[in-house]
Length: 222
Image (cartoon, rainbow, N blue to C red; front, side, top):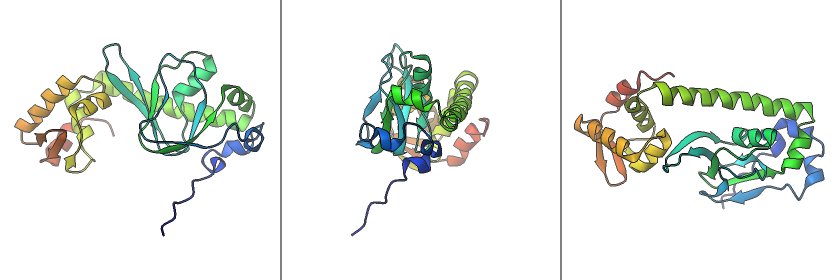
């Protein structure tokens, strides 16, 4: 019988938790690991932050929506990383500016705003939060550069690579990932199909010429 591997301890993923006051043991069971399935909405835009998520297993996709229904993925949070949107909301006591959804079954600690603010008094935890905050800001700067300055056909070609030859992926999912509308993605994919680079089917994309896609995406920064 195969046993499920044990999850890393919170202090293994977030070492500064070993020094915070009150300690994890002191706030248990109010702050205990919770497990949620894929597709769980953890927080939504324009609402107060209910807690600060620390991911022990799984992944959270953080996106921002527009008034016309479009969505742009900002970043993903995996074990050992922090959520920029949640921390910014708690720092400034303002509503959340994005929404977070689990992309797979996930286990996390949800730190209440009161405990989070008390933990910030611990220099090691504060430095860890600010360090990861800076890393996430660098990621968002790269995203802004991509959206503002790089051609969408190059970004689409890059998005198709690295997923195998047969992609079970809708045009809408690609549009959401790239922060545009489905009609534009469909138009570009049909162009790629005319060039012989891909073959399109219902909710599926078959890569026929990876080299051509790599050449299209080659202008993107590494």
